Length: 360
Image 1 (cartoon, rainbow, N blue to C red):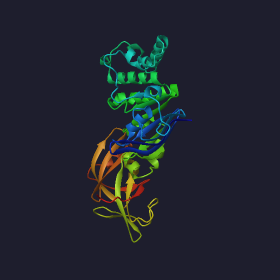
Image 2 (spheres, rainbow, N blue to C red):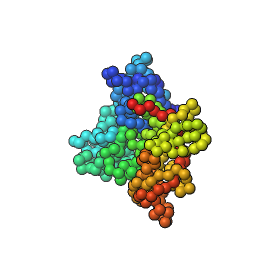
Image 3 (tube, rainbow, N blue to C red):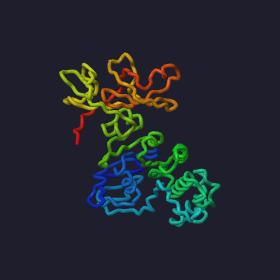
Image 4 (cartoon, rainbow, N blue to C red):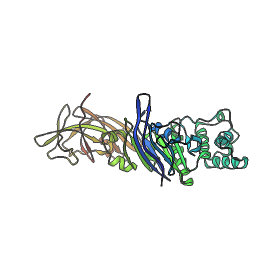
Protein backbone atom coordinates (compact mmCIF):
# COMPACT_ATOMS: atom_id res chain seq x y z
CA UNK A 1 0.00 0.00 0.00
CA UNK A 2 1.11 3.56 -0.65
CA UNK A 3 1.68 5.55 2.52
CA UNK A 4 1.32 8.89 0.76
CA UNK A 5 -0.47 9.73 -2.49
CA UNK A 6 -0.53 13.14 -4.10
CA UNK A 7 -2.79 13.34 -7.14
CA UNK A 8 -2.57 16.32 -9.49
CA UNK A 9 -2.02 18.94 -6.82
CA UNK A 10 -1.38 22.55 -7.82
CA UNK A 11 0.03 25.11 -5.41
CA UNK A 12 0.55 28.79 -6.20
CA UNK A 13 1.94 31.61 -4.11
CA UNK A 14 0.48 34.72 -5.71
CA UNK A 15 1.29 34.57 -9.41
CA UNK A 16 4.04 32.00 -8.92
CA UNK A 17 3.11 28.37 -9.58
CA UNK A 18 5.28 26.12 -7.40
CA UNK A 19 3.64 22.76 -8.13
CA UNK A 20 1.55 22.18 -11.23
CA UNK A 21 -0.58 18.99 -11.45
CA UNK A 22 2.01 17.29 -9.28
CA UNK A 23 1.51 13.57 -8.55
CA UNK A 24 3.54 11.29 -6.33
CA UNK A 25 3.15 7.89 -4.65
CA UNK A 26 5.32 7.00 -1.66
CA UNK A 27 5.29 3.34 -0.53
CA UNK A 28 5.27 2.35 3.12
CA UNK A 29 8.23 1.08 5.10
CA UNK A 30 11.02 2.88 3.23
CA UNK A 31 13.14 6.00 3.45
CA UNK A 32 12.30 8.08 0.40
CA UNK A 33 14.43 11.09 -0.45
CA UNK A 34 13.06 14.13 -2.22
CA UNK A 35 16.03 16.00 -3.65
CA UNK A 36 16.26 19.09 -5.81
CA UNK A 37 17.70 22.58 -6.14
CA UNK A 38 16.59 25.45 -3.92
CA UNK A 39 13.08 26.81 -4.60
CA UNK A 40 12.03 23.79 -6.69
CA UNK A 41 9.04 23.03 -4.41
CA UNK A 42 10.39 20.35 -2.04
CA UNK A 43 9.11 22.05 1.11
CA UNK A 44 5.78 22.83 -0.57
CA UNK A 45 5.33 19.08 -1.13
CA UNK A 46 5.88 18.56 2.62
CA UNK A 47 3.49 21.35 3.57
CA UNK A 48 0.81 19.88 1.32
CA UNK A 49 1.18 16.45 2.95
CA UNK A 50 1.08 17.88 6.47
CA UNK A 51 -1.84 20.23 5.80
CA UNK A 52 0.10 23.46 6.26
CA UNK A 53 -0.97 24.60 2.78
CA UNK A 54 -4.14 23.82 0.83
CA UNK A 55 -3.57 23.09 -2.88
CA UNK A 56 -5.78 24.78 -5.44
CA UNK A 57 -6.46 21.43 -7.10
CA UNK A 58 -5.92 17.76 -6.46
CA UNK A 59 -6.10 15.17 -3.70
CA UNK A 60 -3.85 14.14 -0.81
CA UNK A 61 -4.21 10.65 0.67
CA UNK A 62 -2.49 9.16 3.72
CA UNK A 63 -2.80 5.39 4.27
CA UNK A 64 -5.42 5.31 1.51
CA UNK A 65 -7.62 7.88 3.28
CA UNK A 66 -8.37 11.24 1.67
CA UNK A 67 -7.11 13.99 3.95
CA UNK A 68 -7.43 16.78 1.38
CA UNK A 69 -9.60 17.18 -1.69
CA UNK A 70 -10.67 20.49 -3.14
CA UNK A 71 -13.39 18.80 -5.15
CA UNK A 72 -14.75 16.76 -2.22
CA UNK A 73 -14.31 19.67 0.21
CA UNK A 74 -12.19 17.59 2.57
CA UNK A 75 -9.39 19.20 4.56
CA UNK A 76 -8.28 17.25 7.63
CA UNK A 77 -6.41 19.58 10.07
CA UNK A 78 -2.63 19.02 10.45
CA UNK A 79 -2.90 17.73 14.02
CA UNK A 80 -5.26 14.95 12.90
CA UNK A 81 -3.16 13.74 9.97
CA UNK A 82 -0.76 11.86 12.29
CA UNK A 83 2.42 12.96 10.57
CA UNK A 84 5.61 13.51 12.55
CA UNK A 85 7.71 16.40 11.25
CA UNK A 86 11.36 17.26 11.92
CA UNK A 87 12.56 20.65 10.73
CA UNK A 88 16.00 22.01 9.83
CA UNK A 89 16.16 24.45 12.75
CA UNK A 90 15.11 21.90 15.44
CA UNK A 91 12.08 24.05 16.41
CA UNK A 92 12.28 23.00 20.07
CA UNK A 93 10.79 25.40 22.61
CA UNK A 94 13.61 26.95 24.64
CA UNK A 95 11.52 27.41 27.78
CA UNK A 96 10.34 23.79 27.93
CA UNK A 97 12.29 20.80 29.18
CA UNK A 98 13.18 17.95 26.86
CA UNK A 99 10.33 15.93 28.39
CA UNK A 100 7.77 18.71 27.84
CA UNK A 101 8.96 19.37 24.28
CA UNK A 102 8.43 15.72 23.39
CA UNK A 103 5.12 15.60 25.26
CA UNK A 104 3.65 18.62 23.44
CA UNK A 105 1.85 16.74 20.59
CA UNK A 106 0.36 14.31 23.11
CA UNK A 107 -0.91 17.14 25.30
CA UNK A 108 -2.58 18.66 22.24
CA UNK A 109 -4.24 15.30 21.64
CA UNK A 110 -5.41 15.23 25.28
CA UNK A 111 -4.24 11.71 26.02
CA UNK A 112 -4.16 10.41 29.58
CA UNK A 113 -1.17 11.23 31.81
CA UNK A 114 -0.26 7.56 31.96
CA UNK A 115 -0.25 7.21 28.15
CA UNK A 116 1.60 10.50 27.75
CA UNK A 117 4.38 9.46 30.14
CA UNK A 118 4.75 6.06 28.49
CA UNK A 119 4.89 7.52 24.97
CA UNK A 120 7.36 10.28 25.86
CA UNK A 121 9.75 7.92 27.58
CA UNK A 122 9.58 5.44 24.70
CA UNK A 123 10.27 8.19 22.16
CA UNK A 124 13.26 9.43 24.15
CA UNK A 125 14.55 5.88 24.43
CA UNK A 126 14.36 5.46 20.67
CA UNK A 127 16.71 8.42 20.16
CA UNK A 128 19.00 7.67 23.13
CA UNK A 129 17.97 10.79 25.07
CA UNK A 130 16.30 9.24 28.13
CA UNK A 131 18.86 10.68 30.55
CA UNK A 132 18.21 14.24 29.33
CA UNK A 133 14.46 14.50 29.93
CA UNK A 134 14.82 17.27 32.55
CA UNK A 135 17.32 19.34 30.56
CA UNK A 136 16.49 22.59 28.78
CA UNK A 137 17.42 22.90 25.06
CA UNK A 138 20.10 25.48 25.95
CA UNK A 139 21.93 22.74 27.85
CA UNK A 140 22.08 20.48 24.78
CA UNK A 141 24.28 20.32 21.70
CA UNK A 142 22.81 20.82 18.23
CA UNK A 143 22.78 17.09 17.60
CA UNK A 144 20.99 16.45 20.89
CA UNK A 145 18.39 19.12 20.12
CA UNK A 146 17.70 17.48 16.77
CA UNK A 147 17.23 14.13 18.52
CA UNK A 148 14.67 15.82 20.77
CA UNK A 149 12.90 17.08 17.65
CA UNK A 150 12.86 13.54 16.25
CA UNK A 151 11.49 12.18 19.55
CA UNK A 152 8.73 14.80 19.45
CA UNK A 153 7.90 13.76 15.89
CA UNK A 154 7.61 10.16 17.10
CA UNK A 155 4.91 11.15 19.59
CA UNK A 156 2.92 12.48 16.63
CA UNK A 157 3.45 9.38 14.50
CA UNK A 158 5.66 6.31 14.50
CA UNK A 159 4.41 5.35 11.04
CA UNK A 160 5.08 8.44 8.91
CA UNK A 161 7.91 10.87 9.58
CA UNK A 162 8.87 13.82 7.41
CA UNK A 163 12.36 15.22 7.84
CA UNK A 164 12.99 18.55 6.14
CA UNK A 165 16.76 19.24 5.92
CA UNK A 166 17.26 17.78 9.44
CA UNK A 167 21.08 17.71 9.46
CA UNK A 168 21.96 20.94 7.66
CA UNK A 169 22.88 22.84 10.84
CA UNK A 170 25.14 20.11 12.20
CA UNK A 171 28.87 19.65 11.70
CA UNK A 172 30.18 16.92 9.39
CA UNK A 173 30.76 14.30 12.11
CA UNK A 174 27.30 14.81 13.64
CA UNK A 175 25.65 14.72 10.22
CA UNK A 176 27.22 11.35 9.52
CA UNK A 177 26.21 10.03 12.94
CA UNK A 178 22.62 11.23 12.68
CA UNK A 179 22.18 9.67 9.23
CA UNK A 180 23.15 6.31 10.71
CA UNK A 181 20.75 6.84 13.62
CA UNK A 182 17.88 7.73 11.28
CA UNK A 183 18.43 4.51 9.33
CA UNK A 184 18.53 2.42 12.52
CA UNK A 185 15.40 4.16 13.82
CA UNK A 186 13.54 3.39 10.59
CA UNK A 187 14.57 -0.26 10.74
CA UNK A 188 13.42 -0.59 14.37
CA UNK A 189 10.04 1.04 13.76
CA UNK A 190 9.38 -0.03 10.16
CA UNK A 191 8.31 3.57 9.59
CA UNK A 192 8.00 5.46 6.33
CA UNK A 193 10.38 8.41 6.30
CA UNK A 194 10.24 11.18 3.71
CA UNK A 195 13.61 12.88 3.73
CA UNK A 196 13.69 16.33 2.10
CA UNK A 197 17.10 17.73 1.21
CA UNK A 198 19.30 19.49 -1.31
CA UNK A 199 22.24 17.46 0.03
CA UNK A 200 22.62 14.74 -2.59
CA UNK A 201 25.34 12.91 -0.69
CA UNK A 202 23.10 12.51 2.37
CA UNK A 203 20.24 11.29 0.18
CA UNK A 204 22.46 8.80 -1.66
CA UNK A 205 23.77 7.46 1.66
CA UNK A 206 20.45 7.22 3.50
CA UNK A 207 17.52 6.70 1.14
CA UNK A 208 16.09 3.55 -0.41
CA UNK A 209 14.70 5.50 -3.36
CA UNK A 210 15.27 9.07 -4.45
CA UNK A 211 12.89 11.48 -6.17
CA UNK A 212 14.69 14.19 -8.14
CA UNK A 213 12.73 17.41 -8.56
CA UNK A 214 13.71 19.82 -11.32
CA UNK A 215 13.81 23.62 -11.27
CA UNK A 216 10.22 23.90 -12.53
CA UNK A 217 8.85 21.67 -9.75
CA UNK A 218 8.37 18.62 -11.96
CA UNK A 219 9.76 15.18 -11.14
CA UNK A 220 12.76 14.36 -13.31
CA UNK A 221 13.44 10.82 -12.11
CA UNK A 222 12.58 8.31 -9.39
CA UNK A 223 14.97 5.46 -8.64
CA UNK A 224 17.67 3.97 -6.46
CA UNK A 225 20.98 5.76 -6.07
CA UNK A 226 22.60 3.32 -8.49
CA UNK A 227 19.90 3.80 -11.13
CA UNK A 228 20.09 7.58 -10.94
CA UNK A 229 23.88 7.73 -11.08
CA UNK A 230 24.37 5.10 -13.79
CA UNK A 231 21.33 5.92 -15.93
CA UNK A 232 20.26 9.56 -15.39
CA UNK A 233 17.02 10.41 -17.18
CA UNK A 234 18.30 13.67 -18.66
CA UNK A 235 21.11 16.19 -18.59
CA UNK A 236 19.66 18.01 -15.57
CA UNK A 237 19.80 14.81 -13.49
CA UNK A 238 23.33 14.01 -14.67
CA UNK A 239 24.49 17.52 -13.79
CA UNK A 240 22.64 17.77 -10.48
CA UNK A 241 23.70 14.45 -8.96
CA UNK A 242 27.41 14.20 -8.32
CA UNK A 243 30.31 16.00 -9.95
CA UNK A 244 30.25 16.15 -13.74
CA UNK A 245 32.22 17.35 -16.75
CA UNK A 246 30.58 18.41 -20.00
CA UNK A 247 32.54 18.50 -23.25
CA UNK A 248 31.09 19.77 -26.55
CA UNK A 249 31.24 17.23 -29.39
CA UNK A 250 30.54 17.77 -33.10
CA UNK A 251 30.22 15.50 -36.13
CA UNK A 252 31.88 16.33 -39.43
CA UNK A 253 31.91 13.98 -42.45
CA UNK A 254 31.32 10.93 -40.25
CA UNK A 255 34.06 11.83 -37.79
CA UNK A 256 33.39 12.97 -34.23
CA UNK A 257 35.47 15.72 -32.66
CA UNK A 258 35.77 17.19 -29.19
CA UNK A 259 34.64 20.70 -30.10
CA UNK A 260 37.23 22.57 -28.06
CA UNK A 261 39.33 25.70 -28.71
CA UNK A 262 41.78 23.15 -30.12
CA UNK A 263 39.50 20.48 -31.75
CA UNK A 264 40.49 16.85 -31.08
CA UNK A 265 39.44 13.83 -33.13
CA UNK A 266 37.47 11.65 -30.74
CA UNK A 267 36.01 8.84 -32.82
CA UNK A 268 35.71 7.76 -36.46
CA UNK A 269 32.36 6.10 -35.79
CA UNK A 270 29.19 7.19 -34.07
CA UNK A 271 29.58 6.77 -30.28
CA UNK A 272 27.04 4.59 -28.51
CA UNK A 273 24.19 6.69 -27.15
CA UNK A 274 24.84 9.64 -29.48
CA UNK A 275 21.46 11.38 -30.06
CA UNK A 276 19.83 10.74 -33.43
CA UNK A 277 19.65 13.63 -35.90
CA UNK A 278 22.09 15.71 -33.85
CA UNK A 279 25.45 16.91 -35.10
CA UNK A 280 26.43 19.09 -32.13
CA UNK A 281 26.02 17.53 -28.67
CA UNK A 282 27.53 17.58 -25.20
CA UNK A 283 29.30 14.63 -23.65
CA UNK A 284 28.73 14.20 -19.93
CA UNK A 285 31.40 12.26 -18.05
CA UNK A 286 32.06 11.76 -14.32
CA UNK A 287 35.50 12.57 -12.89
CA UNK A 288 35.95 8.89 -11.95
CA UNK A 289 35.17 7.89 -15.56
CA UNK A 290 38.13 9.73 -17.09
CA UNK A 291 41.03 7.29 -17.07
CA UNK A 292 44.72 8.07 -17.57
CA UNK A 293 46.07 5.91 -20.40
CA UNK A 294 49.33 6.87 -22.09
CA UNK A 295 48.41 4.83 -25.17
CA UNK A 296 45.37 7.06 -25.87
CA UNK A 297 45.75 9.57 -28.73
CA UNK A 298 43.68 12.10 -26.73
CA UNK A 299 46.23 14.11 -24.74
CA UNK A 300 45.76 16.53 -21.84
CA UNK A 301 48.02 18.32 -19.36
CA UNK A 302 47.71 18.01 -15.57
CA UNK A 303 47.40 21.52 -14.13
CA UNK A 304 46.64 20.69 -10.48
CA UNK A 305 46.89 17.68 -8.17
CA UNK A 306 45.27 17.32 -4.74
CA UNK A 307 45.71 14.26 -2.50
CA UNK A 308 42.49 13.37 -0.65
CA UNK A 309 43.62 10.34 1.31
CA UNK A 310 42.04 7.51 -0.64
CA UNK A 311 42.05 9.28 -4.00
CA UNK A 312 43.67 11.98 -6.05
CA UNK A 313 41.75 14.93 -7.43
CA UNK A 314 43.23 16.27 -10.67
CA UNK A 315 42.40 19.22 -12.87
CA UNK A 316 43.56 18.76 -16.43
CA UNK A 317 43.64 20.99 -19.51
CA UNK A 318 42.13 19.28 -22.55
CA UNK A 319 42.38 21.42 -25.67
CA UNK A 320 41.76 24.59 -23.70
CA UNK A 321 38.98 23.24 -21.44
CA UNK A 322 39.49 22.37 -17.79
CA UNK A 323 38.21 18.96 -16.65
CA UNK A 324 38.12 17.33 -13.24
CA UNK A 325 39.48 13.80 -12.87
CA UNK A 326 39.39 11.55 -9.80
CA UNK A 327 41.59 8.48 -9.40
CA UNK A 328 41.77 5.98 -6.54
CA UNK A 329 45.23 5.81 -5.01
CA UNK A 330 47.22 2.71 -5.91
CA UNK A 331 49.81 3.07 -3.16
CA UNK A 332 52.74 2.41 -5.48
CA UNK A 333 54.97 4.25 -7.95
CA UNK A 334 52.01 4.70 -10.30
CA UNK A 335 50.76 7.51 -8.08
CA UNK A 336 54.00 9.44 -8.51
CA UNK A 337 53.73 9.49 -12.31
CA UNK A 338 50.89 11.98 -12.48
CA UNK A 339 52.39 15.28 -11.40
CA UNK A 340 51.47 18.84 -12.26
CA UNK A 341 52.65 19.83 -15.73
CA UNK A 342 52.75 16.28 -17.09
CA UNK A 343 51.04 15.37 -20.37
CA UNK A 344 48.80 12.31 -20.11
CA UNK A 345 46.61 10.29 -22.43
CA UNK A 346 42.98 10.01 -21.36
CA UNK A 347 40.04 7.71 -22.13
CA UNK A 348 36.35 8.14 -21.34
CA UNK A 349 34.22 5.37 -19.81
CA UNK A 350 30.42 5.24 -19.69
CA UNK A 351 29.98 8.74 -21.04
CA UNK A 352 26.50 10.13 -21.83
CA UNK A 353 25.46 12.35 -24.72
CA UNK A 354 22.90 15.15 -24.72
CA UNK A 355 21.67 17.62 -27.30
CA UNK A 356 23.66 20.82 -26.98
CA UNK A 357 21.79 23.69 -25.38
CA UNK A 358 21.75 27.05 -27.12
CA UNK A 359 23.75 29.72 -25.37
CA UNK A 360 21.57 32.39 -23.77
